[in-house]
Length: 499
Image (cartoon, rainbow, N blue to C red; front, side, top):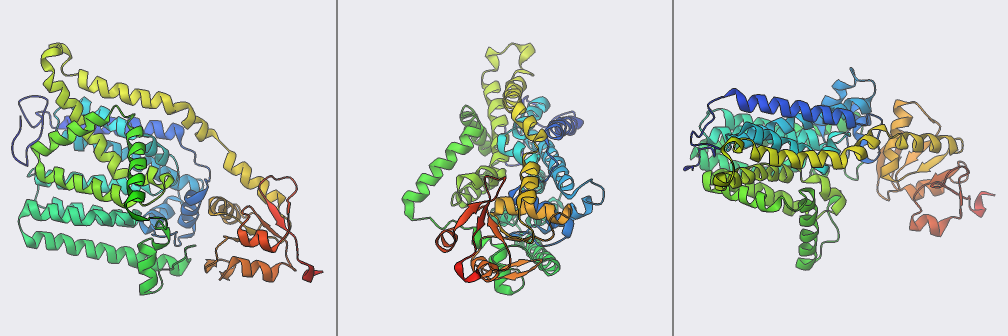
């Protein structure tokens, strides 16, 4: 058993592992295995939605949608010099970061469990969770963000265990970088700074870490401004004034607008709990709870910090819809994977008398390995099909071929980004002006459009207008016909004044 906040749980009475290389070795094996899985299931072609925009802005070195991701953009830009395409560069960034995160999960589990192969199996369970795997094989922010957050948590844990006085500053640097990958990581600052204060018992240490975080926020803000000056983001708010920067970096335009009292929030909590539980096939929940309790008994300060992390992350993103929520709460999945491994280790120790001595070292790892193998097999064909899919490229090619010459094209964000990527990277259909169906100002390379409908009304007599989103104002203001050769594109008919 254990006592004190700095001790590790173990699979034997020896506490800390005698083979110091084992956690690093198993972490390396796990990371390499995850990398191979991701590499075989990654699709390096341009995607849709945020993926295409992030890849394009990495190539252009410009501002991305709120809340901004300057670290992702800058690293992605560097990678475009060695990758075949911008989309390939940013997809491989996700692959590498997600694989490394799986290795860090192994090291986190090894902080409490002296069972290297159990830790490795726990890392693979994490790597193969559906929302983690999905975001490891596309261009997205979550893999780089989670890598930096997990590194910060590991540094703080090792510092709490007494491994080095400079580790809290290392953790703050990593967390500061994480803000440049996904600014929502700022939600973690209060609870982690309180952990620093509780462990160090020195206000000066906590203040120094807080100052580092303020500096990191200032650097991220400056990077967002610099990128926006190079090429403004396609967001409602631009980070080019104090007020605009605040609205941009806080993601004000993405906030849920349907929250209405406790009943709404409770129903959304239940919905999202079901999503998280489902990703652990429900049967993992008792083990996660047991693992949390095991950590709490061993390292209460750190367990409290991690619990606060889960509560804050889960609670904040519960205001978002289930589609976003499925992927946005990466730290929750990471910590649940750690607790799952601890719970399995705890059961193995409690039932050690019922397990043959020759199997006591491998049975817990085998149990988690079966979970990971099942996750791999159940998803493999779907992921391979995704890796080989050319659906996005086919859609883009068909649309580019179908549009009239010199058209104004109004496209939903999901398709707009892929079409714009093709325009810029593939230099296709430069005669077309792409617009979002936004009633607020947007900055495009072809100019500022204050209201898409006013713009369309003004150019309707001179240029053909097509859309894949039949908004209420378009439906009320214009007759539409199908664009020949497509099922999703409509052409607006000029009004009588254009005759």
